[in-house]
Image 1 (spheres, helix red, strand yellow):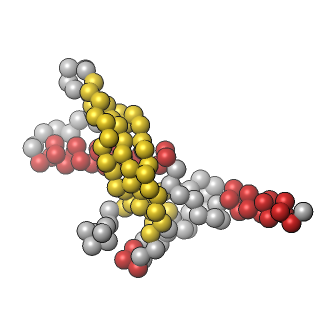
Image 2 (spheres, one colour; image 1 turned 180 degrees about the vertical axis):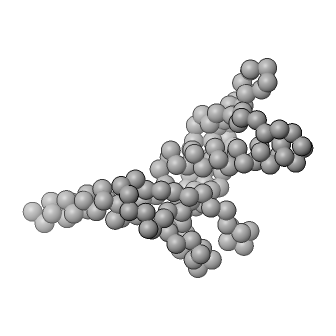
Image 3 (cartoon, helix red, strand yellow; image 1 turned 45 degrees about the horizontal axis):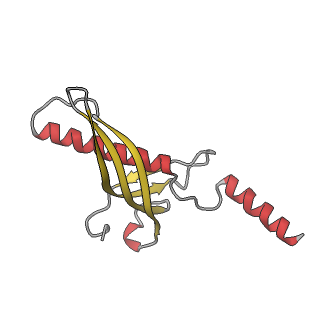
Length: 135
């Protein structure tokens, strides 16, 4: 009986978001896409080209590690911070409309939650730590 009560409380806390959740794969995919888009825009700006729509499609993500960061170096972020590492495959679309698969691109992302967010869906933020923090 005690096991059933503990399990019910655990499920209730998990569904209410009281227990920490790691970033889901869809959030990781969106963070990778945002990072790639930012890189493409920076390159276009550096070359004085007009920014165009992203020319990639993320095909597959392989998360190797999801690590909760507890370092005091990250105390400026009010929520929980996670470091997510792995690889992804992407298809690059060229102007000639052909696609080229680029497999096994590494990624290393930092995502944080907002502790004041009381909505039922958790909000994740892509953060860019300083080089000192990222080591």
